[in-house]
Length: 102
Image 1 (cartoon, rainbow, N blue to C red):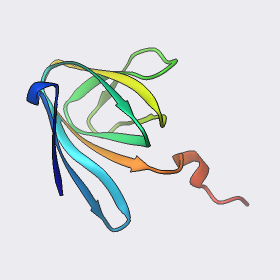
Image 2 (cartoon, one colour):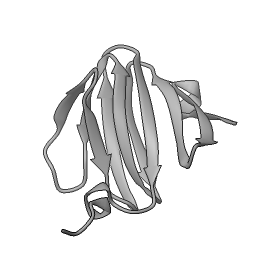
Image 3 (cartoon, one colour):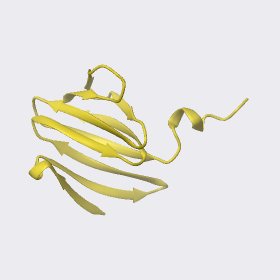
Image 4 (cartoon, rainbow, N blue to C red):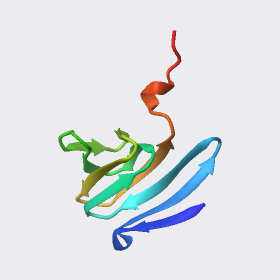
């Protein structure tokens, strides 16, 4: 388990690795934040909502139960007007590439 703090403590997460999954569970305070990633990330909103700006895409709102995919080796931004809880799964292969061929 690893504790992470970003943007002066406004974004805090706990890293984990279990049952073949690696990722973080965290909370984002109200504000706008920029991030970069090495791996593909699947981010699921557990509570609250935020706007996400992904590479080459318009900003969109993501609510409780929804998810967004961040491409590997990219930068992205989020805007929250309230605290938001999230699950971020690190994917070493793009989710769409994991489907078995017929």
